Amino acid sequence: MGTMNNAGTVLLTIADMSVLDAEVEVDETDIPTVSLGQQAKITIDAVPDRVFKGHVTEIGNSPVQQSTTTSNTGQRQATTFKVKVTLDETVPDVRPGFTCTAEITTASKSSVTAVPIQALTVRDMLFNDKGELVHEPPPKQGRNIEPTVSASNEPPPGHTRKETEGVFVIRDGRAVFVPVKVGIAGEKYFEVVSGVKTGDRVVTGPFANVRTLADGEQVRLNDESNKTSTSAANR
Image (cartoon, rainbow, N blue to C red; front, side):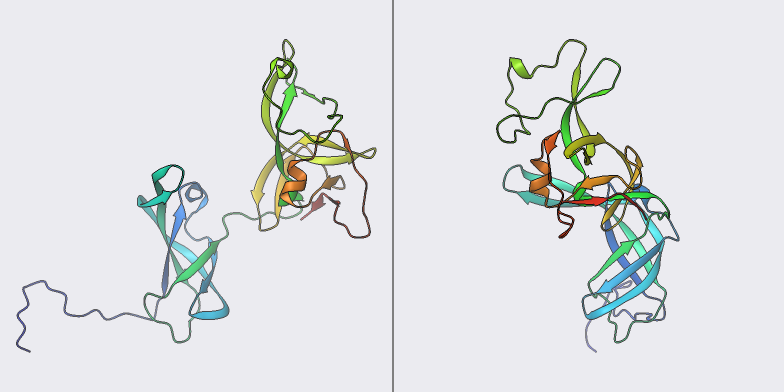
């Protein structure tokens, strides 16, 4: 009382808690796979140890650009899109403005060949004029995945080198690099569309170990601890 308010001034906001919407920001690289009606799991920081179900009800057409600063490149733009997820169940003691995280299921498949995410790596491989992979002898001393650029590293006539995504398959006691084409990704596994088949034993482990493994290098199976390899399986 006694305070002057111009026409159109917002005096207060009343929240309708009968329908709860979670607004999340999705990176531009993931937004093409998001569509209306997809199922989602929402976790709320203020309500620990609970996961709430929901579905996508709105996808922003315009990006929400945020400026982030990095020590190497300085200022850069991180482009995200706002996605609204409507909760399908009630949340106890909820308040507007709570912080939340949503995991949206963009695709699902069953009975497909899959490999652990840790098994997938990238190599600079040699291909002949027919586009076929050429397996070069492994280095004699140590592991040299990033060769020094020199005349000896130039591909032979008619051959090319290119970065190739693949896994190491154990064959005759050696880790043989096999290019693969992956499909959808889960929390722990990649779907393999081509390259390996169910039952193939692939090398997996910490990123540094797989990254430094050379094509054709001898390996020793450790079936007891299951730390050296795993088999491609239907999932």
